Image (cartoon, rainbow, N blue to C red; front, side, top):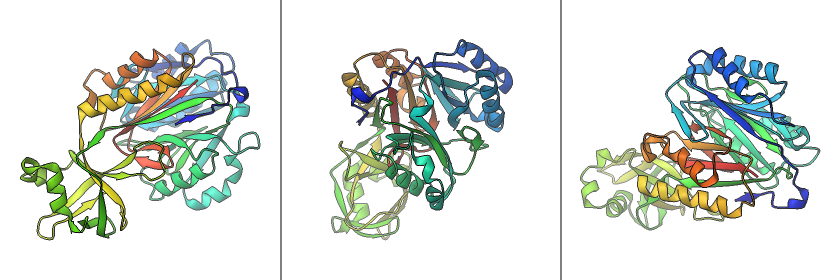
Length: 384
């Protein structure tokens, strides 16, 4: 989806600038990044910061040092087991990346930590930018919050476009998100005015195996029948005889795709196949399902992931009228080297198509696009 197409109302964004460090001591790494950012670009008022979980416990100190040394008050970001920078992935190593953006304060507003649906009412004023509803939002969430999907859905309704982008923190320690300060437990980020011109797209990491089916019997996350047939029989038919002999090995390779009904693309939510009962011929998936809902079986497919990644990048490239100012990319923790190869190939594809633009992001524990929580996807947002 392309946002903020009305050129007459767009603001002139100044330069974006980014830096990264793999130095093992958080303070030294932070100072190295800040040194690289100097001199700050004109009009820099918003900063993005992402760190691997090696530095997670120090993220409050990192944010405080960034504010002190740059004079930029507003920062957003998160923690990932891996983080992303221009053309480079940093996975399972000490690493820190940050980007500062020349966006005026009148064109964005920090969204504070929302931990429950009631917070959406208590923080209604934060869903405005310059006294207008925000155009779209960039958010980060804590996967441990049981309301996170609901928070995403309802927060999206507070924007004019119904559109959020973002990711859920992935960490073996603190699950911090940054919204001016580091905190845990909810959904937070930044809301942008319509005058901030961006283009954002989603790319899938699994490919459909067969046709759409209809759920004809179900209970919570258990599917009893598809197309009025035992659900396991339908699964076996779609995956073929060879895989049907190895049902215990399907986890992490075969998934369920739930097509979305209000998307302007052939879009689907990917959910884990979490259980198979050969006696009852029931299957269980990693989300509740509904009677009459469409479903298709999918497989993890590196070749299709590369093809769809290039499709997404070409789609963005076609609508650009100049070189992008900067970008933020959220990719599933299961992508990266697992699907594209060990040499940051996923990030290199972005640079090869869009150029070596300032880019930051992280490997997420769930990706946010529009009003939904995805898996096995990449969500790229380009500031134009």
